[in-house]
Amino acid sequence: MESQMETLIKGLPEQTKMQARINFYSSRVEEKLRQVQKPEPPGQSEISFER
Image (cartoon, rainbow, N blue to C red):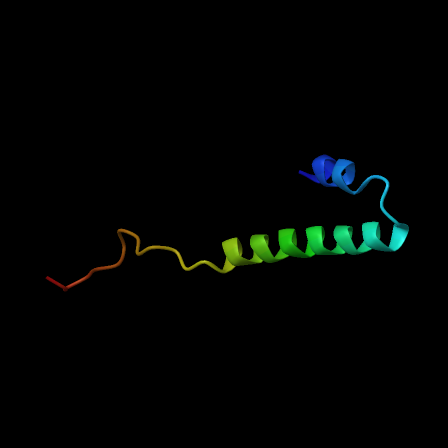
């Protein structure tokens, strides 16, 4: 993904490239944080009395 982004921004002004990189990496970090913060489904050790 990173190499595709670099190919896409090739030839753009430096400031635009920098902003594209910032946006790219920010979205990657946010995605990873969402994965880490996702609540895990109840395991076998938990008992549910719902019917």
